[in-house]
Image 1 (cartoon, rainbow, N blue to C red):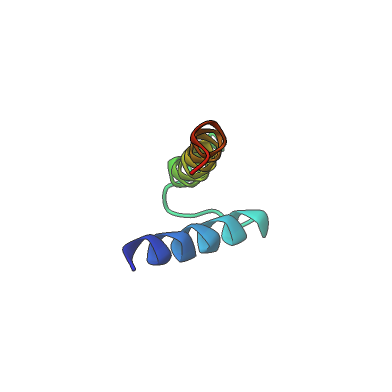
Image 2: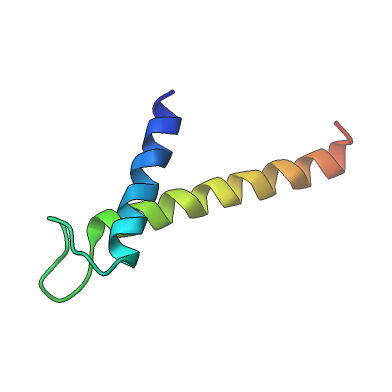
Length: 61
C-alpha cells in the first residue's frame, strides 16, 4: 500500500513538472531534488526488475 501511494505521488510530481510548474523544492537554478528522487526510484525499480529477470533466466525459476 505504501509503495502504491509513493508511485501515485511520484506521478503527480512528474505531471506537475512536465506541465511547467515548479514545486517548493525546485532550486532557484532549476534543479529539483524532489524530481531527482522520483527518477532515482524509477531507476531502482527498473534495475531490480532487470536483475530478477536475469536471475530467473539463469535459474529457470
